[in-house]
Image (cartoon, rainbow, N blue to C red; front, side, top):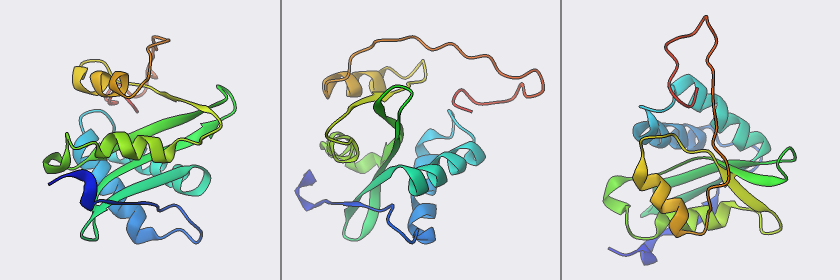
Length: 150
């Protein structure tokens, strides 16, 4: 199966479709669980549905991929928050297409990557992203059980 049978559509319109938002959260959580708690992910996705952009990839009306992000004036870039494509659809250009469709045309884009995931780093390099920063993080003393992206 190629990416030809895939429909891409913006799914963050008003009013917010709670069912599509939950499907997006569930799909992202399935692939990002080791990196971010479901609570933090839910907060991010809700923010992107209301203030950012969300694009879904559908195959036969089933959500098979999703990307969420938001423009940030701090960096003057569109920041990709999270992306996931169901495993059986990976390697077919769907993640690349989702990324292209979510980024606003008139600004650049950024993404923060968790260490220890070289495949994701290769993916972003392949679609034209360049490493420009290293990010350091310090968790609060009250919460020592946070996941890397929390």
